[in-house]
Length: 70
Image 1 (cartoon, rainbow, N blue to C red):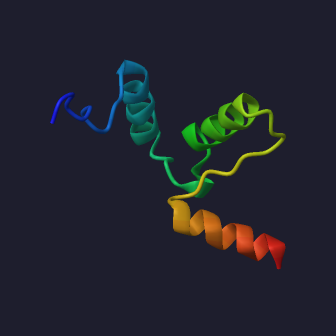
Image 2 (image 1 turned 180 degrees about the horizontal axis):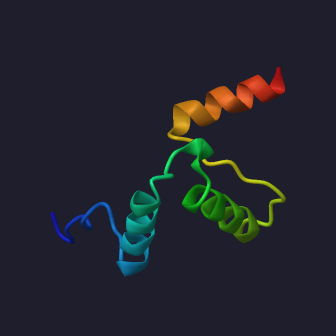
């Protein structure tokens, strides 16, 4: 196949540094704060949203959306 599929996942030094910070803080889960809170704030601002919530995968995102809807 030409062109070849790009390597996955794609990441650079900024992503590597963020991952290392999260691991070193020992707070990389939902209630851990730190990198999670910073990511949510930046992601929400990028999309013009007042709030953003990081979830583990698409299934959890759908479950959460359905719970909110009742």
